[in-house]
Image (tube, rainbow, N blue to C red):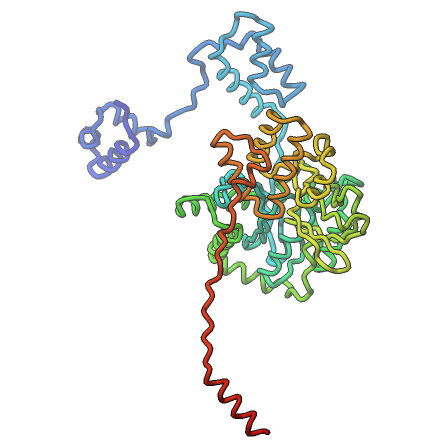
Length: 497
């Protein structure tokens, strides 16, 4: 059995006490000859170990290694698996699948001894009140739902580099509006303004035109206007160097892990409203920031107070309503009421919705389109015109937008299966008009009822199933006449005469 360091220490101690090797060896639990060797060398067993520099098995790649090394010399980024596949093609039958691990170890050893140098990351000494970093991070992996419906979103996340104080807001795209909304929400929470604001090369802050000699792109003019308004110096990382914004990058993952833990403690990830979810996230931020209070106070003492007014959280524009009753906002198409055709309307594009104004009066608010969707047509805006021109429905470019739900889509398909095309179109448009002038949910309920009964959802049949209000005759009280009042009236007339 191997001798341990603890046994040898016991041996040294006992030998110092008595000077007898045999007695010390017996108490240390080892052979006298072994004990003599340790006392003579004065070393522990762990100090005698040497690294093994010999192979226990033949190297299967010894004969081909010069060729592998030549490949690595030309392209050091080559991976061992790719090299193994190349070797199996060059030398069929010579290598087995289980030997790839051996090649990986040899390639790793070559990189350590002969490979190119790696990039060094230098720890930064952050100063209080100087750097605020902002980044966008996807929150979809958390599986958040609002009333059971999946809620895909991002978080505009800001972090003070010195104290790691952080704040964030829910957003739906990496746009300038989202960045401005997140930055202003952070500044409101701080009540102060940092010296610098750092971002990566997202299109919200920078664009492709004019990279400088350090690999940085120019800032967007509208982003620079925001920075000038708050007297903040804009900074950005080098292209393809997100590590330079490492404080907020690491904070993104840490915050999402905290949210996941709080969701587990909560028991579910479903919220009744978006505001409830927003308050949930803000509560987590407040708990985390309490732990950083001391350094955060140093940050505040080094920053300027926020004394300027906040910028509006929207961008304004103008759009002329086309003859198709549509406007275009940020290359997205929205329908509007037909009474606005020919008018030039003013639009306000918020991060989550678009408002349309005429003569300073709000006409409608539309959920803002994000992602790949390019148009949204509200059937209530066009149904009146389609009823007058039902023949336009079958080839209407945006016809798919006129099916509010899958139930309405199935209804139209069943009508087309049993009726001539024009009749089917007209019946469906009448059903859709009923949804527009009453309640869409009530019409959908009747359509589901007809579907369950196996009936074709004709317009007249829908109206037969439409709930009719019960007519109740008013209950009239019989008029009771008091004749004595007439006698009093006659007496008054006689007195006057």
